Length: 109
Image 1 (cartoon, helix red, strand yellow):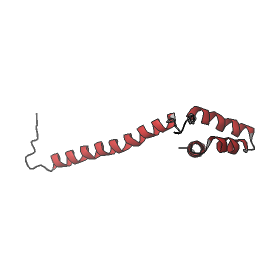
Image 2: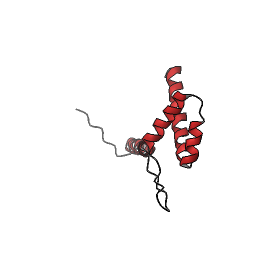
Image 3: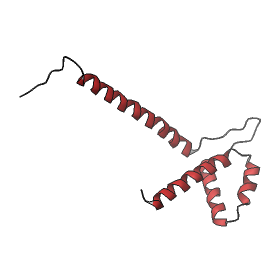
Image 4: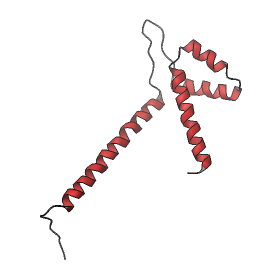
């Protein structure tokens, strides 16, 4: 991984963390906070990312927050890696058990 790719990855993670934190805020306060960003390009970028993530439905007593598309992909990744680790561990244990079996049969042509 090059230095440039590493920097892009770190910035991408920082932006996702910031968007997630902004989504937790009250919509009016979030708007004021985003409007206080000095750079118009950065402000428009965060506006776009927040629009893609969805807004809360505050029409009644209960606030409804939609699940963002990024939340779904992160949940899948969070489930995939532990499952892969468990599968790899099971394969290694099975091979160790087979290799150390006293009744191992070696077939030769």
